[in-house]
Image (cartoon, rainbow, N blue to C red; front, side, top):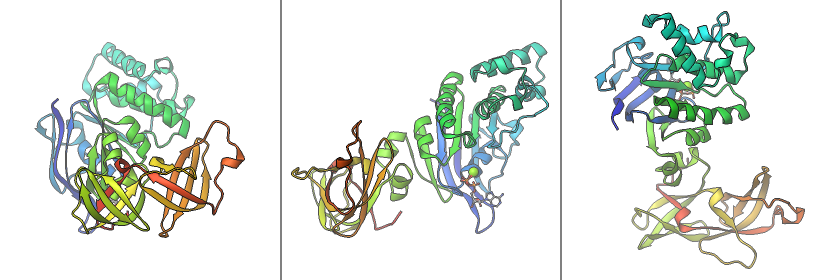
Length: 365
Ligand SMILES: Nc1ncnc2c1ncn2[C@@H]1O[C@H](COP(=O)(O)OP(=O)(O)OP(=O)(O)O)[C@@H](O)[C@H]1O
Ligand SMILES: [Mg+2]
């Protein structure tokens, strides 16, 4: 595959102290769906706006399909951006809204009509071509905004929080629809979101940002299974952290001292013994042990809190060493009151060695 976008050491310093984006290098392949993910203020929109040409970088370069476009205005880039407030013109029909962006392209009336029809058909709304935006639902208006962006057939579509205005149900539905749309049109998509589930569901590749920089990038399951730092481990999914010390390594298994217990972690690269480390494991990888059950890597404590969330239970367990960890378990389809853990009862947990993360240093995320 060919690179469609190449960012090289790209920075945007709004002032000496306000840093939007800091030294980002990133290559996006033609046809890829890449998501920029991170908390508020980490620089996602700034990076997207620089790619679109709406913000000038203070350092670095942007190449689009092999051509340097760093100083080109938006209209000279084969890139289109869907802004968060996808304002449609209320006095125009759906068809006119979608066709509006084609006016500057000097196309014939017939060609415009065909393109509008194609774009609206792609988002499944050609039957609304003569309606006004205010006659449509929020999700339909969102899709019209998408049709308006793809009608010019850009090489790259930039989407800044495109689903943030929608309710949870519609949002879930649109995530799948947008993913299908991406597969159908073959355009490169770069989307911004702060919703990790959305990023995992939709993207070929996720770029996690932290304070203007790339914290880690990779395929969704690689980020989930191999987070490079506590920051990523806690931004993609939830992770329990314990302070620890590394011990001896035998083969792929490394002993790690945690408060009140010793665990074994299966690691690709083990730290030398005696180092301060942070141990991590996900609540959904923790198994609650039955009273007589024995297992490798056990943690003992008392139930501090029980959170019911329909699909399952999340139990907060206060470990003997004082730390608190979460353990998730799915519920049987009929819940007997007697199986619910009681606050204060003792509980033993187990986590398999291949589900134990080890990070250098004692950094709290
Ligand atoms: N026009 C501007 N002038 C000065 N500082 C700005 C400007 N735009 C953004 N910033 C600052 O740059 C940083 C990154 O902002 P940006 O809008 O890129 O964040 P974001 O990741 O998109 O956040 P959000 O999820 O809240 O939209 C923030 O600290 C922000 O205050
Ligand atoms: Mg933003």
